Amino acid sequence: MTPNITELITNRAYDAWDKMTEKIISWLDVIVVNLPNIVIAIVVFFIVIIASKYISRFSLKLLNKTKLQHSMKGLISKFIAIVVILFGLFLILGILNLNKVLNTILAGVGVAGLAVGLALQGVLSNTYSGIVLSYIKQVKFGDWIQTNDYEGEVIDIDLRAITLKQIDNNLVYIPNKLVVEHPIKNFSSTAQSRVILECGVSYDSDLRMVKDLTIDTIVKNFDVVTNQKEVLFLWREFGDSSIDYELRFWINSTSALEVAKAKSECIMLIKEAYKANDINIPFPIRTLDMPKNFTLNTSDNNEDSSS
Image (tube, rainbow, N blue to C red; front, side, top):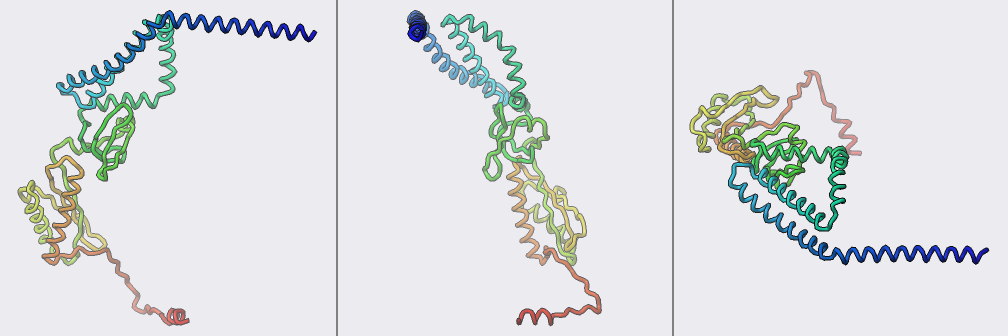
């Protein structure tokens, strides 16, 4: 009984081995027969990759002659490169006589596209938002913008995120979807920016003199401010330790960094002018009103310290 079972297993093993070797030989025959097509397909693949790069560069040169934004030009050139690569892949499938595979791929594109669309909603949303940002003229390379609590210069817009360079030279990558869905403050959309400075002087100061001196200091030191009417000086309130005011004037700048520099220069100039005219910018102080019969007993504190 046992020898029969052993012989049966041996025969089946030989049959399986024969079938496997026949299959491998048939595959080798197919590879040998299609070897020229495989070599041609490999050559076509490298040609398509190289051609896509050159075509993308050539299309970018043509687009540079148009009035489209730089980000939109880059997006279109990348899309053209992708189309060239897809065309090359279909050509390679045809060379390898994989027409059935091609038909299967085309038939499954619809179902796969639906599944991918559901799985990659966030990515596709960022991609669409990137296309929108590349097309609109309100945001472009070099603009200084503020969005989603971040502020900086736009240095890149791609299909995933917009890149801002902040004042401290750090880069911030904000997903395109967030930029499209939230307000954008563009400091570069106008030729001028306003400098706003808040300060205060002591209660014994001559307010009219302070106003005239402050306005004259701005007019004399900022070339863009030609007369006193271009400086807005407003007393705001009676503060805890000072009478506070707000100063506003325009400068020729589209960058928040230049506004910050102008504000810094304004602070130094006002401080120097106030010091020269004995005008005090008081520290925050607090006055304590003690009752008439109030006495401070320090004997206990002295005993504790001596012990």
